[in-house]
Amino acid sequence: MKRVYIVKALSGTDIDKEVLVKGWVRTRRDSKGGFSFIELNDGSCFRNLQIIIDADLDNYQNEVLKLFPGSSIAVKGTLVKSQGGGQSVEVKANEVKVYGYCDPEEYVIGKQRVSFERLREIAHLRARTNTFGAVTRVRNKLAKATHDFFQERGFFYINTPIITASDCEGAGEMFRVSTLDLSALPKSEGRVDFSHDFFGKEAFLTVSGQLEGECYATGLGNIYTFGPTFRAENSNTSRHLAEFWMIEPEMAFADLDDDAELAEEYIKYLITLVLNECSEDMEFFNKHIDKTILETLHHVNESEFMRISYTEAIEILNKSGQQFEYDTIWGRDLQTEHERFLTEKEFKRPVIVTHYPREIKAFYMKQNDDGKTVAAMDVLVPKIGEIIGGSQREDDLQKLDARIQEQGMSLAPYWWYRDLRKFGSVPHSGFGLGFERFVQFVTGMDNIRDVIPFPRTPKSAEF
RNA sequence: UCCCCGGUAGCUCAAUGGUAGAGUGGGUGGCUGUUAACCACUAGGCUGUAGGUUCGAAUCCUACCCGGGGAGCCA
Image (cartoon, rainbow, N blue to C red; front, side, top):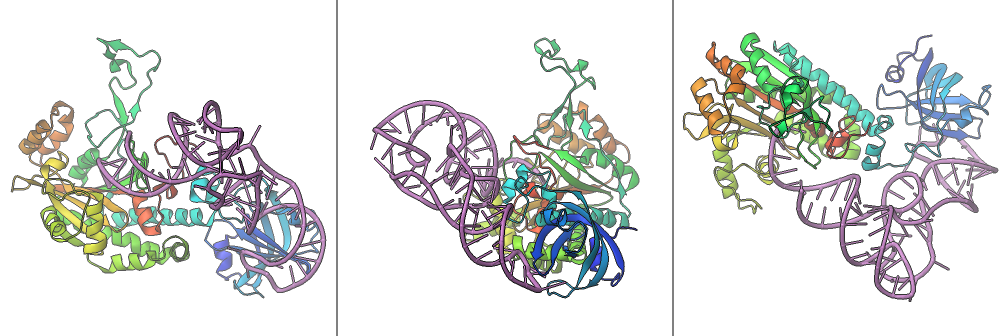
């Protein structure tokens, strides 16, 4: 007999038929009326399936009564209309097979409340909770929707390298990749001689696939990457991970406006899909995690994202009458408090801030004609702050070279990146979206460590 | 990395200088088409680690470890 998933069983299409379901016991309630109730969950959906187990079953005394939360079982029975409230269908068991028992004295994830902090310490088991089941299903849909969105628009999915042998990505601290014996490093003139290392030079984990992405965009038109990204920054916040997933589209023949338009469409596409396809999980988040999350997502979907320049943002902040810890002076980067004011108080919707001062932005960003700003954009959303960072890329070789040198870097390692400007250069743009930050935004989960299965953060890489 | 807060029963927390408590989960008994089930009884703790102050420390002090919130860096 073929197993049916609980999501299918609950749909009721097999009513009055014999079904086989398998899953993990969430709770068991015994009735002295001569039977027990078991709530079974198999991960296929948020809801549990109620199983009615008659005391007449052969293994009732010896096995069924020993089923505690976490136990794994298979149930053969008839899917019937439920006599009780709370659920429309249930299974009247004819046969219960136990795969594995679960000792309630030792097993932490029982019926009692367990904090997210504690669950992080037992991350190998937290997938069995309501919250992490819901987060995982939503995260999965967001990944699928990401591919759908870009594929529908003719973007090619490419895989950029995870190991990068050029330390020129310039987006913060990197993790070193090496096969050298740390206790006996080869030295040359007092410094480590990386010519003996695996790649014959220093190597790191990628902090962005953008530069490689540009190479393919300027051949295939539109591409996107969706892969792991590593930052060795000692960041200890609810919005940072040392290992996270990033989506980076790159478009040839596209300027900053096209970029912003794509970002807005993409975000709305993801929200729409989650609202439509994860309604049970989203109702859970709205009830137990963030009581405004559904309202917020609907609101974001219906509103046009506010677009303002950095210069306008500074003016608005200065005129707001709001007291900030950090001054808002043209030329300084916007602080978290400024960003949150703009998106949460001033406009109450996502805000795309564009054209930042060139001094505070990366070398590869397109320099504007004013000589002061670059064609950069940050997409800010309520609660999370910056969720997307992007720009039109500098496509003029002279200007690119000047910027590289201004920042005290040498041109040589960028030879291949510069070639893109030498041979058939085109205007092009792209952005990076932090996947976990988006999962946070959509679910209302407070801590980014709870929207990725096994978080890596400073001093923490268990599992 | 900086600032602030915390670490007490399996879990969630109380007890702020005087014999360490509740809820919940577990066990036992009762009751019931139950659904965070309910009622009664019961077991369960060198109070993160190492020092110090004190007649006496979960409580005060110092250091360290771990966790959380905020900031910086960013996605």
